[in-house]
Length: 472
Ligand code: XMP
Image (cartoon, rainbow, N blue to C red; front, side):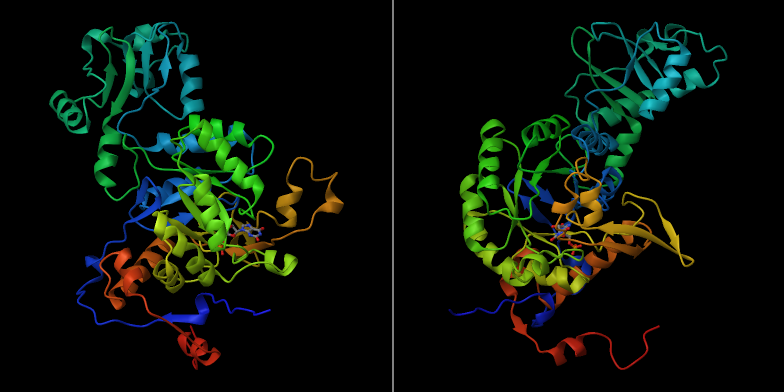
């Protein structure tokens, strides 16, 4: 038997190239997440329950990347997290919150709390627009029994527009009439949507955000391949997740191939990322089955113990090479998932053939991750855990009965609290831009084309890190 060598990030460096790039601002970090989804930066937050729920997904998407909402919760809860991202910013709100003219102020106050929204359209039972109720209409009202129809601005005083008005014309109309809300109606005055001044301004301010055709932030959601996965997929598609990610440890399996076929047969237009894999054969089988991107990584993660528990895995850089050589032929994007510890690893992953990189550990401990900040020995921390760790397994519904069968493939860690995730994103994208200038690459395709890797020794690794001084 011949045993091949496989490498990972620390084993290599990129050879500097003669560069005509004068400033880091000249480079473009645009990339493809999947067949039909483009991003401005190649960063994806991991579908782990200590990393990505709606808050993280919103921050990632605003920065030009994307977050994948984890699946370790009820179908309903996961779909709600997706919906929170889709509602965060949009040009057109397709299903605006409505109240009836017969609702009392008490009922409106309950809805304000429930939906965290202060303005409502007022409609009759057939969705015909009767008026609008804004914060100004309710804030000074004294009697909680007052009816909406007495408080609302009636339809005779409203400015409305057809559904297809478009952002530019809407902005003009709202500006000319000094209104903050523009209900969109059909010929029968039935409500079709709503445009708000806040959303128009947000849209102009966030030119780099990852947005869908309606100006809403992009978001992904993870699913499994067993039990109720089709019901989960259906709910997430209904909640308008932009991409589904098959989240299983060994993606090159009959279970996953069957799941891909089922999903693509029922929802042919859904963007589907298959994973996790680490070989060329796996890539070609998943592509044949119909995926729109693949996710690479068997065991490189910061909290993973798959390799020590099972003896299986492929060092991440070789895994990216193996997979991307097949994917490039089919124009299928590659996501490199796990093992990134510093910005240089991101540059190496992209140079080796990845289109985007998923990170868990590096985003953990930030303000946007789920879970509380805990103080330990006077310092603030958050918890990060592998999705196959013992504590993650114990938090699942049937854990107690199956306790003896649990073989963890991950660990739980305490990580320092790190403030807003944007700080981390800035470090990574700063490193990437700088790396691209060393590689004379104006875009990520040039980074790949120009890439020349050299293998280094332990002495090289030691030299690469700061050395022979006491780091402050
Ligand atoms: P990083 O290195 O960015 O890796 O923290 C994140 C990725 O790790 C994977 N993951 C696991 N792998 N056991 C594993 O073997 C686990 O318990 C586990 N939890 C997460 C996952 O692919 C994630 O995106």
